[in-house]
Amino acid sequence: MTVPLDIVIDRAQGGRWTSLRTTAGREWLWRREAPEREKAAPGDAFVDAGGLEECVPTVRGTPDHGDAWSRPWTREGTADVLHCDRFTLARTVRATAAGAEADYVLTADAGFRFVWAAHALLDLSEHAGLRIREGARTRLFPEAAPLVDRAWPDGAAWVEGGWPAPCGLRLDRFGPDDGTAVGAVVDAAQCCVHDRADRLSLALEADGQPLSVALWRNLGGYPAPHPYRSTGVEPMLGRVFDLAEAGPGDAARVPASGEARWRLTLTTNCRCA
Image 1 (cartoon, one colour):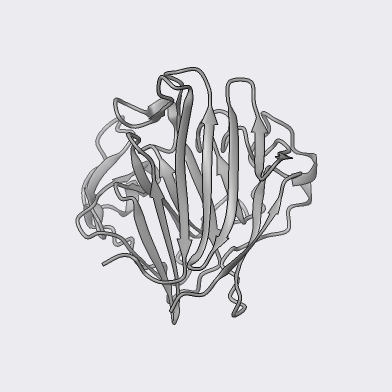
Image 2 (image 1 turned 30 degrees about the vertical axis):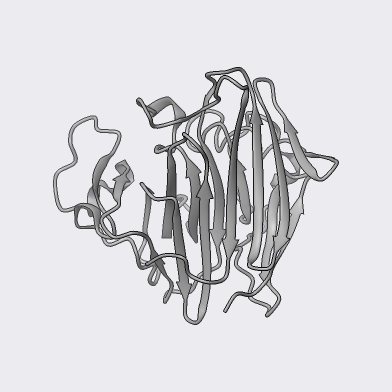
């Protein structure tokens, strides 16, 4: 059964989605108290307040978690708009009978390369799981080195394996806190979160761009010295967290028209096999 979704957005604080709630009362977004967020300025280290962040033009790297989270957005007609030095991002969010949709337009010089992620930190129980197409190519990053079934290659930015257990590391179950924190990027355009009877499906569409699902499974392993649990399921344009590490085909690119367009669709029924 499909249930409508209500979305609350804080335009003054980075355009962050602060609530994604079903009409039945299920809140999907995890949040934490972070009063220092109000004083954050472009170039600052990321302040994690939870919710869904718009990370662009990178996630890791510089600027930390991108340019969007530390800047106010404005309302222009039906769109939320972010103006940065090298690009403008417009986002139009609307409710649908099946859930919600968000349409994006990034305007920049032709050839501009970027990574974008809907950095959604979800409020999930230890019983939650993530369904993605079996065998999908999955990249693991160096924080996973102690957890994989092989020696990490010297200097490697990532290793690859097949979903749901790349290099022997099972990622489709969130489970109880175990002191680990792992990031992964899966070559897939859609996924579905299962948490007991609740479902949240996330799907991404974009012509000619690399489509992925990023996963941040922090089960009390980050940050030092005061770690907490945070679980991210993040539709992504690109195949790396850090734009500086992107090889051929690993980043989105603005076409000759000067506009890159994509759509994020959220529903409360499962669209994955």
